[in-house]
Each structure stands twice: as structure tokens, then as C-alpha cells.
Picture 1: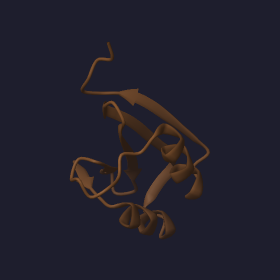
Picture 2 (picture 1 turned 60 degrees about the vertical axis):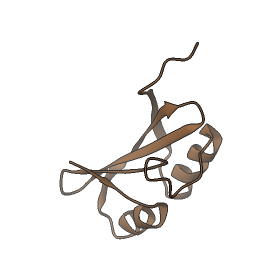
Picture 3 (picture 1 turned 120 degrees about the vertical axis):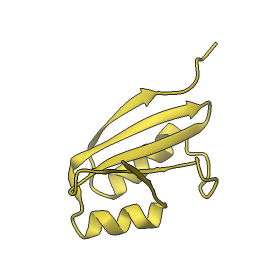
Length: 85
């Protein structure tokens, strides 16, 4: 189950230790639109991104800055939902 969350909600979860491990997955669903997903301690995952229209379109450097700001040093990048031509 994936919960859609805001950046503030994700930061709160990190601060209280609800995010397990130190890994985020960055996925791109269309050019310029990025999503960050995190595994939570309760076995679910959380997603932050542009799906709900409440966040700006993140560039990859902006995604890297966000995950580094919450103490994640390594993350994976995946492509989902579109093909680059």
C-alpha cells in the first residue's frame, strides 16, 4: 500500500523514525516529473511527488537535495510510465 504524502509529512516521518533504512527511490513518470518513495517501518511505503498536483516538478538535482537534506546518502533512480524518444 502506498500513501501519498507531502514533503512536510515525509520530513515528519523521518524525524520520528518511521522511515526504515536509508533509501529512497526516485521515479520519473513523465519528463520533468519526479516522485520519491520511501519504505516505512510499518511495511508500507510513502510517495512524494507531483501526482496530486501539490508539489512542483522536481529536477533530479532537486530530488537529490531533498533526500540528502533528510539524511539519505544513497538513492536509486527508476523510470516509470513513459519512454524517452
